[in-house]
Image (cartoon, rainbow, N blue to C red; front, side, top):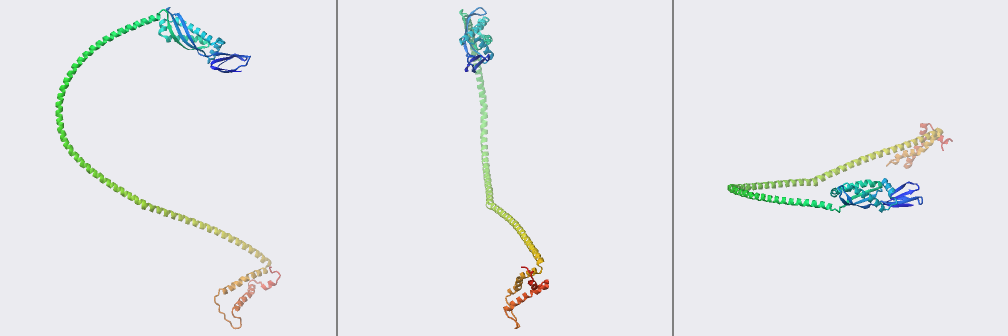
Length: 427
């Protein structure tokens, strides 16, 4: 089972597998029922009212002292918590407080016995520090720490403290009366000195006043002379200043005129500059812009012509290459054709030649009759024994054609009429 406790409480688990016991200050712990035991101890701060009645001091004077102490079991220090568990486990908070109270009271009585009433009464802080120091060293062994200790009250039944107060009161009253008498004496002395100083100051003041009156009269006469002189000088200076002022006014007028003239010249110069800029903006700038535009157009046209020329050259080059390719292909075709014709000629010999001549006869006839077809006027002369007119002309053309076999035979040695009758003629 799980058990928990707050920060003002400690749990101690003992039993099976818990040797030494586990101590938890503010937390949780797992406990096995029946074989492990859980015990709790309070860590609250305890307020103790430490009273020591009729304790004899070092000089044998019985006094009663009451102090207030704050103590608690220290849960953060494992050693102190273990010591407290060993000494107070199973005890209630009241029992623990009673043990701490008796310990503190014993130390308080011991310290009172070593001090006088005056030391305790006049230096309470020192007494509290001694009790705190001695009690802390003893209670630490029990696992208890003293948080604070304060001396609350000191009194006695023999009026010893009251007598000390009376003596002190009488001393204070005595000092007060002496002080009052000294103050009155000093006041009378200071009053007499003040009166003497007042009379002396009055006499000195009257003397100083007489001297001041004399100095005043002398100074006044001197000042009057100076004032009259200054007045005369002032009148002359006034006249001179008036003349200077008039002169300055005239000079200022001239300066104003000069400034006005300068401003007019400046305005004229600015107007000339404005007109020049206007002329430049309306005439020069448009002319430069037009010039720039024409130059750009000329440049564009030049580039266009260059590009057109380059394109034309490229076109001519490609056209020439195409024509050269065509001529080359045609030449190859004609060469191939000539090769085949040569093979045919070699195979058929005279028959092939005759066949070629027969194919060309229409072209020859056309070539013979072509001059006649272009003739605009023909004059026919007849001897009377032959045909006249168109029949005559046609007959002459046929006569020329019939002479071709003889001309071919003379040129090639091949007779067309003989080859035409032979069986080797090309189909």
